[in-house]
Length: 78
View 1 (cartoon, helix red, strand yellow):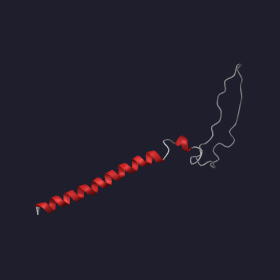
View 2 (cartoon, one colour):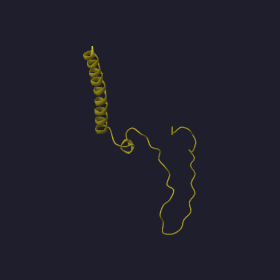
View 3 (tube, one colour):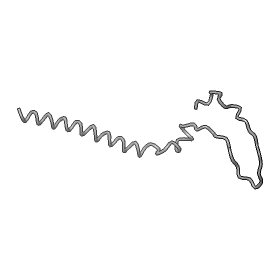
View 4 (cartoon, one colour):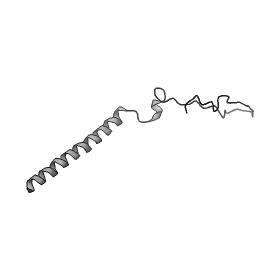
């Protein structure tokens, strides 16, 4: 009877170990296969919103005014 209990513990340990090792292996493979950051995906999957130019270096002081006519239209999805 004691041998049966030890056998069941060993089987459970083996199953849990296989699940843990499989999870670690899957995580390691995913790091190798998928890109490391969202910046590498910007051209293909993630569409990044273009931001306006706020400051440009000039030799003499200039003033410019611009209006963002599309602000808040709700179509950009961001």
